[in-house]
Length: 122
Image 1 (cartoon, rainbow, N blue to C red):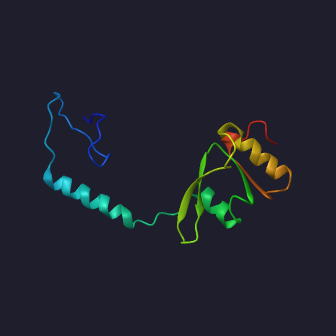
Image 2 (cartoon, one colour; image 1 turned 180 degrees about the vertical axis):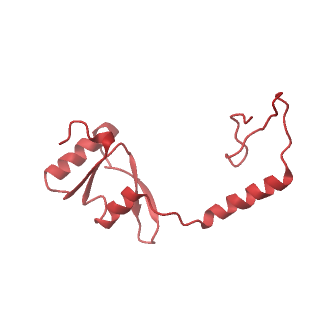
Image 3 (cartoon, rainbow, N blue to C red; image 1 turned 120 degrees about the vertical axis):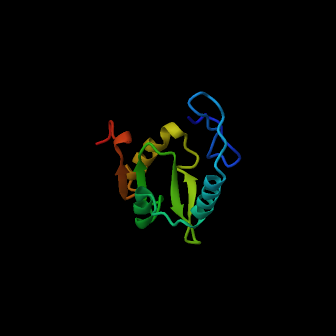
């Protein structure tokens, strides 16, 4: 039974047996956990499909994204990604409206509409 208490790496927590008594962590399992966490740095995960498609189409300056997201991954010059807020200077409530206006005014030629933002858009 895991309690909602994070240890120093923020991923674990105190573990208790069925009677509520604290259990000692197995040193071998602790070592395995440490090695797995160190290995995460070297994983090359595939890009988020929506962000990847947006980047292939020239980036957020060319694609009007009408979704429930507030941030997106944008390719940087070093070949990595940066997490950036969508539509700087626009309130969170107005992001999709601003994106729709950019598309309707032909400032952005591609529109992506998710189910989360599709109500009232046709």
